[in-house]
Figure 1 (cartoon, one colour):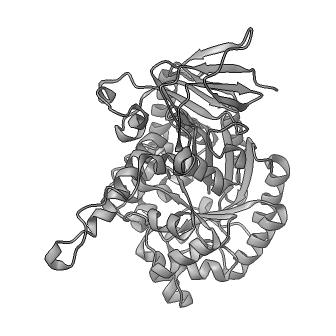
Figure 2 (cartoon, rainbow, N blue to C red):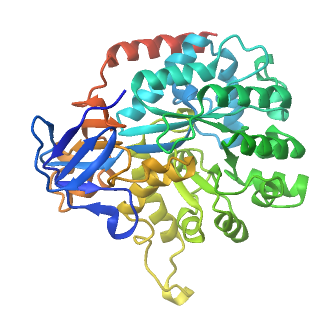
Figure 3 (tube, rainbow, N blue to C red):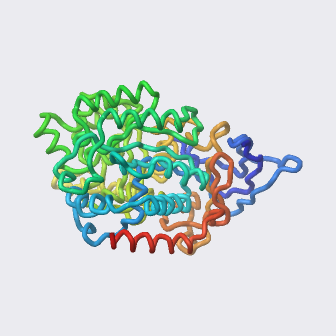
Length: 472
């Protein structure tokens, strides 16, 4: 269905998500036609053209979230896992609760996560779903696409899963048992045939995404899986180098670094991105950059689990593609893109500042405030995400690109007194009033509300589902 044409007028500031001098546009008007940006500048309304008044508002690209685990939206703040590092946390929270999910719980969790993202201005979601096992009585893939479509989101299914177990899962219930490679690849082919759209403006995509390369498949299977993905024309995604355990495991088992290992098995390139990449050696950064491999930077989850801060600035400077993901709510109790990008802005500066030394100790700078600008962060959260997902039609706000954009009204006191209103949604944190969110020119949020979504009812469903999950 063709989206209507309309004119957004009187915008106070525009952040485009584009690099360099193009990162900001003076506006004040944006014309939308057929789901795309038709023109930007001082524009005269056409006869009968619908008008969206954006006076005193700022326009940002709709965010592209490149790593999530939506089913974890019912696992926030679990006391047994709240103070644990990654490996013990996996057993304490996601693997402990995963077998208790039924279809209704899964659907409610997905809806909560997608609504949370929408309210933060997110238009595209890549979910790394690993809730699969042989003989599963419901189709998690179908539910994810159904819920995203109902809310008007672009959705990328990163089809997780595993063909082998590690000690962590071995003693857990049967619903954690692995699939065979044959079954896994057959389902990838089924999903690609049913859902995958290769167009640069796609609303649906499929990605081959075993849960972790070091533990989820044998080395030969990794190569076979990568070959299958490239034959089907789909991308590859997984977790990598989130903690030192990845480096320890790769050295002990394979005699190389994690990035060297995935490179040996055809898992590097511009069609591959990894979540986290916190613990990297300099040679690994160079290899990721040289191959154009991407990162889904997840600063809040990495901070919450005490994993560290990914070297995003160094990765981008080396040539890697940088994007941002919120990760699962079980390790990020605020799984929305505004808070994630605010954290990314602060943490990159803190990371560089940590290396500052006194002059007598050989230091030559005071702090890290130049490590990441607001423009950098907006780019990572929008066109950077479009790059790693291969959605070139979403590569920033410019004529010809998709009309995926958010109109933010900075009417809360936390934004009062800003000298540069354009930076407010990221620099000031919080969640501004979302006057409108458009995805492909269709308004999916209007006046800070999602059509058809009753937040009180969703809250009641969440409470009931959480109670059942705890009682199971």
